[in-house]
Picture 1: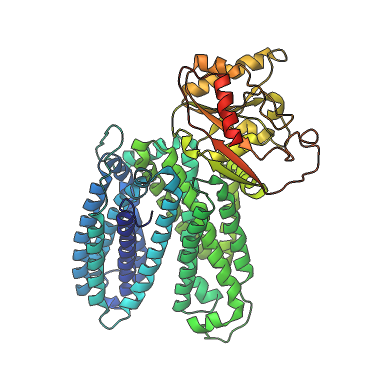
Picture 2: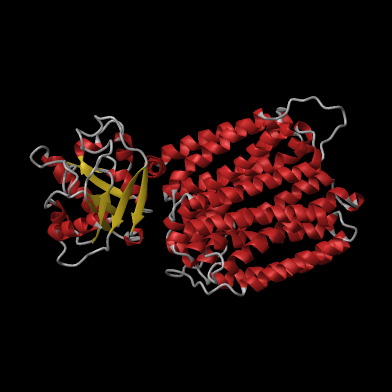
Length: 619
């Protein structure tokens, strides 16, 4: 996928842009900090903070409009225009660098931030249009790897170039060359026309931003994903901002060690993105999120505990070589790398989740809302650091400790607000830790629209296994007695399970179940039923009951046959006694979820569907 024409030109354009942005920004900061200070019309510290502000301000001002633009025009054409704008900005910047016109460079930094604000929504909304759903997680993983490695290279190379004797000339040449290469790469991106009906909107500074945020808030799962991503940027900004003083005050190290810490963190995120892709098994896997969140806190706490307590002589400073030669620092370095790795695992599925859940014609606007909230959280990170470190005189390790604790609070909040995240986590543990689940035919589950999944019923965890096989939420219809099992009751209730029972036992529940199924299908939801009506007593498929015929008579929607194999004999099945009453005997056994070709013809009935499920069961 990486080297395909539909992805590589875009990937190269993205990496070259991130590299150029960070190279230029750090060249400006280094020039201001270390040379010609008398030429500045304002205080150097004010200039540095102003530079950080003018780069992030455009994300507040223009992201909403950028999302609308990206959703309403050919994305490849938009990228080419933005890269052409970057070429013009960087050509002007080259002149400003050579002439050391710092205020002009500051203005150009604002324009660079504006160009990035318009590039952000199209950067992520392009992926679900260019890639298949099975490739989406891998695509996002590559984007995060490329972005953070480009940021790292841009930051480090800026220091090397500026320290060179002819640094100004080389810096001017590099920003121009990178801009030219980025524009040429964008020329090779295939055409990606707007999806859905066009709905261009006039530019509106504040109301447009607020409208963009409100639209994202209308879908709770997307809004929670945005808040979770923004929290990651809050945490990341806190770490990146404090690296210099952390190295100086607590590790007694020089600037080269700051570069090492930045490299460990950035490479960790890149590796975490790769790990996430490998363990997502080809689809958007929210079940990995808790591993990322817990890693962010656990390794942050351990890094603080690993800070060497040795006393050093006054004025002693570790160089890069002496720092890595001291074994006391290994634990700090490993923990920092693992913090970054956890961040990569955490952020990749969230971006993919937004891309798959947002309406196709509004995906860029959802990303734009994400960028606005990201910027807000990063500003919040700076404010919190200033208050705690400056006003209350906290130490940097205490700040890191607080962030680690807040990270767990955020985890609890997000998971309490979006039960689907919890269900996905339980399903992931079940499918990849307790069992080895293999899914065949996942592409047969429709990406949108109403549908009914019919499956054989083997165990109490069938719903959780099937849930993990689908990237879409599923409303499960199950026997009321199963939906009220104490250990699983909470999960089933918040998953929108539709309880049903025999009309002889409880007619009101029976009739209400069919009404809920009708409403779910009318809302274009995916419903799963177990037509046998009970768990299999012998591992074989029992006779399908007439309930499925009753549903299809009222709502003739697409039906997807599905067969579960490998769960018979598990702790949750009736083999050897009633489920949950015997001791577990099987761990990490093979389970298959076989999904058949959808059917929606007039001959679809319970007998026809039972034959299809039986065929899948025996293959």
